[in-house]
Length: 418
Image 1 (tube, rainbow, N blue to C red):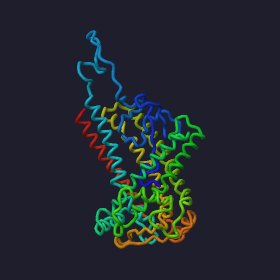
Image 2: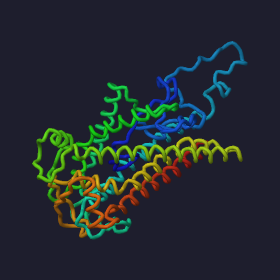
Image 3: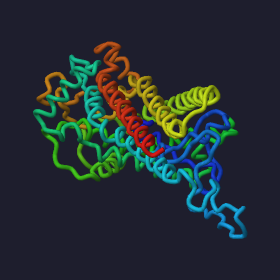
C-alpha cells in the first residue's frame, strides 16, 4: 500500500527520527534493522527532507542555534575565527550555498516522487483494478499512448485526480504513528543496539498504523481510479469523509459485494510491513556499498571540496530511490491483489485502459485474498498481476532523470562558488 515511495505511499511507510546531535535534543535512533554504527549519520526520515543537512561520513549535522565562543581581544596571537584572519572564515558563502543546495536537492526529490509521478500512479492503479483489460501495458510505450488518450479526451485533470487525498493519507499515517507511539511503549524507531523484542514492538506499531490509515487509503484509491467523465467535483476533505463513513457504515451506498474492513486488514498490513522491511534493508545495503566505494576513492586520491559536498547528499537520495524501486517491483503483484480487494463493491467506474475513452464498471466478486489470487492466475495469467507495470518504469525513470539533472545543476553551482 505504497503508491510511491519512499516508501511512498506510499504513504504508509513514513518514519520520523531524531538525530545524534545535541542541537536536536536527543540520541539518534536508526531506522535500519542492523547494528552498524556509522550509517546513522546517513539516515534521515520523513518529514525531514532528504539532503537538507550536512551528512558527511564521520561528521555531525551543524548545530544550528548554538552560539559560538566570542572572539578574544588579548593579542594578535588569538584568532577570532577557526580559519584565521580578521573576518568571517573562508568558504562561509560556500557553506551557505551547500546547505541551501542540499535543501533544494531534497525538495526536488520529494516533488518528483509525490507530484510529477502522480499521473503514473493514477494509470498504474487503473490498470491494476481493470480485470476487463486485454492490454496489460507492461511497457512504457503503451502507457505513454494511453496517457495521451486520457489527456486528449478528458483533459489534464484525468491524470492528476486524487493527488490531494494521497497527501491526506500520508498525514493520517504520520499522525497515527506519532500518537500511538506517544501513548504506548511501542518504539517509533529501532535503536542501533536492537534486539528481537524491540523489532517486534516496532513492527507492531507499524501494523497498528496501517490499520488506522486503511479506510482512508481505500477512499484515496477510489478517488485516483474513478473516471473523470462521471466524477463529481468533490472537496479536498472528501477522502476523510469517505474514510470515516466506511468505518461507521455511512456515506455513499455500496453493493453487497463490498468486503468488510476486517477482511482487508491482513492483506493491507502484510503489504505495508513487507514494503517497510524491504525498503529499510535495501536502503542500508545501498548506503553501505556507497560508503565503502567513497571511502576507497578518498584513500586513493585527494578529493575536491565539490566532490565532498556531493558525497554528503546524493548517496542518501540514491539509497531512498533504490529502496522504493525494489520494494515496489517486488510487491507489485501483492499490490494488484490489494487494490482489487479494496475497490470491490464500491460501485466505482474506471476509464477503459484499452481504448483511452469510454468507462467500465468494477463488478468483481472475490471472496478474499486467496480467491483473488487464484482468479487472477486462472483468468488473466501470471502477467495479470503486473498490469500497468510500464507506469512504474516511467515513474522511476522520471525520478532518476530529475536526480541526475539536479546533480548537474548542483555541481555547476559549486564549481562557480569554489
